Length: 271
Image (cartoon, rainbow, N blue to C red; front, side, top):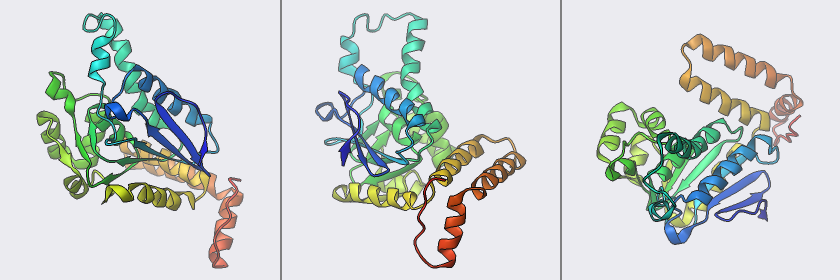
């Protein structure tokens, strides 16, 4: 792996066209302080112009994925608890923008979740395109247990789309944890592996994606994202038709067809 960027609270390493994004505050279970929020926003903003990165794996250092907002750091900030409504909205948006940037990023994002993924950490996992879990993973919408609404940082958008309205309502209204085994049964995660195998499983899944064309990956993520919010089948079909015509005009498509007919591995060039 090669270091890509220098951050205080994030580890970013490139392995070919795969970028590993590690939340790196293990002493606080990777809880989200102001620096981590700022750097996550900067990283996901940068993906739009990062043509070298084709797949991102997001994970947490130490014993957890992300324990949510760093309440100790938040309480120590000047004026904590006394912010005006406009200031509160601005602060809230700095966090919620992260999941919107993840959703708009051209690259597929895989969340490799182990240990706690609570509150904002749950939101990060939900905003990823694919989730795989270690056996220790435990996720919850912790906000409601702190006296807030459980509907925060996109959780009420993503969760019912992943598990359906009833299970989403149960988890949001109670703040109860969902463990890895139930998450797999509910379709919230694509698979569960021993924690020691989580990195290898994420690398293998990313490798399966990276065998495909860069344009195909980008167009597929874009179409999936828009299809979730489409108002009709006709809207989805129109987008699919547009994407197929774009992809069919590339040299990579011609290479893919030739490789299939010649029974060999394709050599895509993003062209």
